[in-house]
Length: 430
Image 1: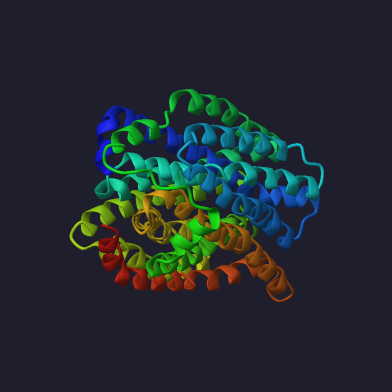
Image 2 (image 1 turned 90 degrees about the vertical axis):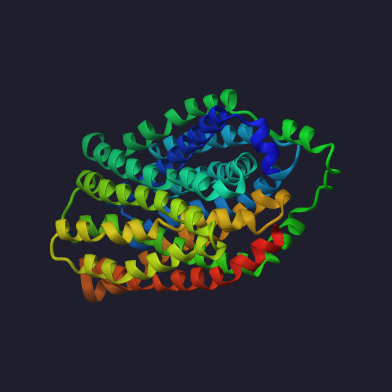
């Protein structure tokens, strides 16, 4: 399939496809993460406690995102599905629902709008991963998926910076409207510019093999879960995501409550620092995985394991800092280190499963990463903050983040364990 993809896709069209998908993913994370920087002014206007903030920023989105992710991924894996069209429809839905968040008059209306964002975003990454994996040869897949994953730090950066500045200038309601509506126009670009390569690839393969019969959703999930390395990868990615989403949401609030910064200041400074470090870390992860994984494929996951172990004590020091300037500088290294895993994780997942369940593999990873990470991370941290408030008051968030820093050793362990099996299982898959 790698040979076929290379013969049917020119370098220029592949480059254009990757750039468009990156832009879509940037919009995905702008619309997903802008609520974090707006959470404090929303809470003040609507009278929300920390548990409700956790529900709004995490679980409301994640439940429907994960529930729809698997069936949409199964639909994406069908030979007759036009993946660019699916991505375009999903983009239009989540963009419109982001704009509607700005019209919410109470907690429940905002919760419903966030659910709508999750419904739309469920149709983005599984078909995008499947599309990229069809077009890019295995030896370059980590870099290609890391390039796509740059949408996470870039989108988070822009969501924080733009959202924070707009919150200070025109309020959180207009921030949602201004950020959400352009995505509807981008959906038209995706629909008319991106092409589905499956027909050309199927024609090229026709002389070599008979197409495999369609398999059910649960049979696809069962196939994916037969890989022990994939299960370990799932544990690593899910715990990493739990900490990443929880820390991102509550670090923005930490800077506002503990250090007295405005949303605009947090968006500008924390957004720039964390976004820049995240971009470099994501690129570095893909580069290291391709370079050292070419010599020994277990080393695809060596960098994430080492990086997350290094990040833990430095993050703890950052949350201990007495000034926001020192805290921001110290957070550069942990943010960079915690971003290294994106490309290697999804590249390894795509290599560990058969061709016809690639989108399902991505969706299973996303299901657990988002249900456990995005769904439970912000909510758990918020509930813990509420429990600690009688003792620590406004400093309760700081103490929650202390614990989160050292929990980074958990995904480091799972990445290391997975790396020990990776070479053997990838050799078996060819």
